[in-house]
Image (spheres, rainbow, N blue to C red):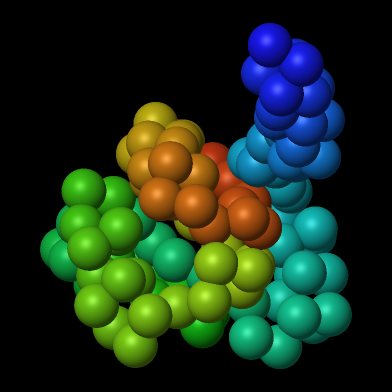
Length: 121
C-alpha cells in the first residue's frame, strides 16, 4: 500500500512538470508582418488563397499554399521547423484563420494571422 501511495505521488509530481503552454495564433497588422519578416529572416509569408487568386495579386515575397493543403505541403516540403514564424493571409481572413488553426493543431509554434490581403493595401 505504501508503494502505491509513493508511486501515485511521484506520478502526480511528474504531471506538474509538463508544460500546459498553448500555442496562440497572433493577429498582426501589415506593419507588424513587415517587422516579423525583417527580424526573422527565415519567416514564411503564405498566401492561402487559390492559385488563381494568387496569380491575380499577392504580397511581395509571399508563397502560395492553399489553406486546405498547408499542413500537408509544409510537412512534405523538407519538414519545416515547428518554430519557424509563419504568417498567413487570404482575401477576407476566413481561410487564413482556418490555415492558422490547422498549423496550430499540427504543432507549429509561431503562427501569425494577417487576415485579409486588403490589410496591406
